[in-house]
Length: 103
Image (tube, rainbow, N blue to C red; front, side, top):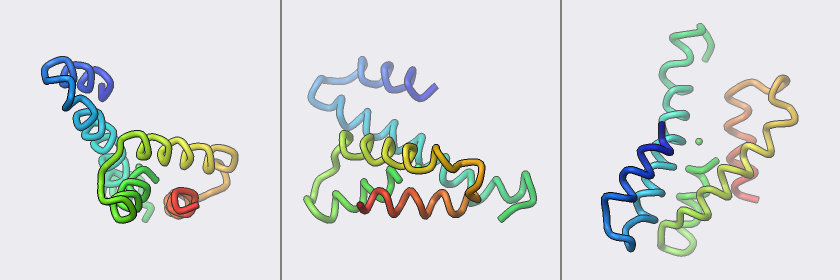
């Protein structure tokens, strides 16, 4: 769904703004995944996106937003947690993602 929205939005605007639209769509997907865990997962299952850490870290270091860095941070977080996803609790997966994004 996010990919379709990104393509629709990018096709509706000027070329120079397409990276901003892509960043908005990537952040929408990662932020909603994080907020789902923080606010909805506990209600649904009775239990208590790494992209965000990369986004804010790079913004502090270089003073600009970069969709390529956000996608790389997202990919590194997925890579870090994939091998041990069946053994790690969801809260620990978020910590793994933050640590990998910092590295």
